Amino acid sequence: QGKHPADGLDARMAGARYGALTYPAEDVAKSSVFAAYCAHGLCTILLSPSNRTRDGLVANRHYAFGFEALDDVGINPARIGREARSWYEPHRLSAHQAALRQLAAQTAQARRGALPSVAKPPMHGVGSPP
Image (cartoon, rainbow, N blue to C red):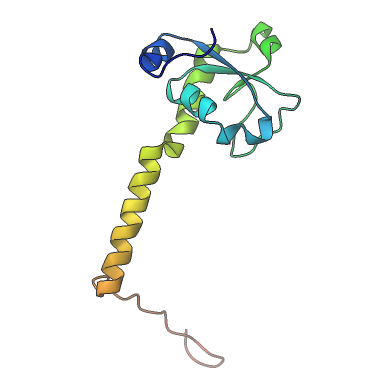
């Protein structure tokens, strides 16, 4: 339906089942449109010359590879939407923010010497008891 204003887009996506996307399959994990479709649990119909992806994405599991994939009786668009959302969860911005906050806190503690030191295991040389 073309371009939509940001206001109300979330509601429109929440009511949708599919989203079509023309994007190189090998880079689709970097697409903000694909991320939005995944976040809303939509079945993305990926229009790409290749279905070779990275980042753990699998054709007809995390996205439908072309419109003809929807003709396959083994393809379940609702399941694809759920699988895509599950794949997306650790990629959400909030997940990255939480990981960065935790890393920053650990770094600050280490700089203050608040983290316990890790004892090195004893080294056993030749002829020494284990």
